Image (cartoon, rainbow, N blue to C red; front, side, top):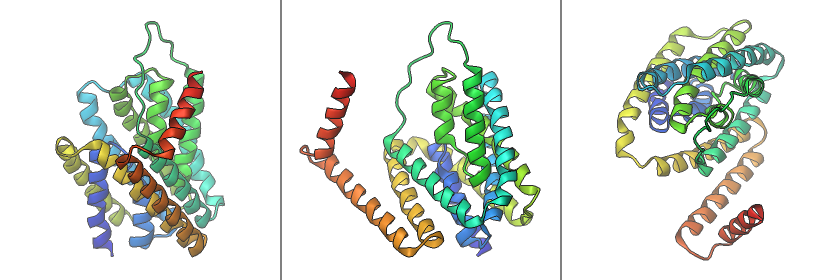
Length: 290
């Protein structure tokens, strides 16, 4: 099972390299259900995997000038404080509750991936950095990362783009610095109460890094929008497995049924012009414009 876990970690890394994020959301289920780790050990190990993989990915962005160090370090410092606190707080929370929280994080991540990233306007001349807002957001996102082990990239990128006024490519590169900082801080919090298998952890981390490098080379050959949406549906399906394992099989089946129904409706709307959801969306946008 350890060999299978390490092998599957390569595919997690490929997803990370292709998508620039999101693949880490699969690390905890992989370690918990395939690697046989308990919930807290899986979360702690995932923080190591996410931290190292993000740091490696950030190097290429930094070389290309796509990292805004001041904004990233401010957000990252707040995120580290929140993540370390989350790692310490996790000792008082049952592992089942943490995994349920992780499933909720998976659902939120999947929805964000399916909706896609909205275009962000270039920062205005004289744009002032809202440091208090960035610190507050960093603390909250870091706390979530420390508790459930997810990197929170889908929260960090919009925050950097909207609060920090960064162009989207720079926000993506800067987010990797932030994710690495708070992942290592969260790991530090967990290590005060959780022992991890360093041999397995380093092997999984190395496999994920190799996969991320492979995925980065494949980005030019794959439609990123289609891949992101397919991965979003896959993450939703995986969240139903966790809910079935940690709450009750009926809850998992219900979540899977809702996911399947939503996927079928989305597919139908993509193929046919007469779609009720499209009309609803159009009406909502017109009301918002009014």
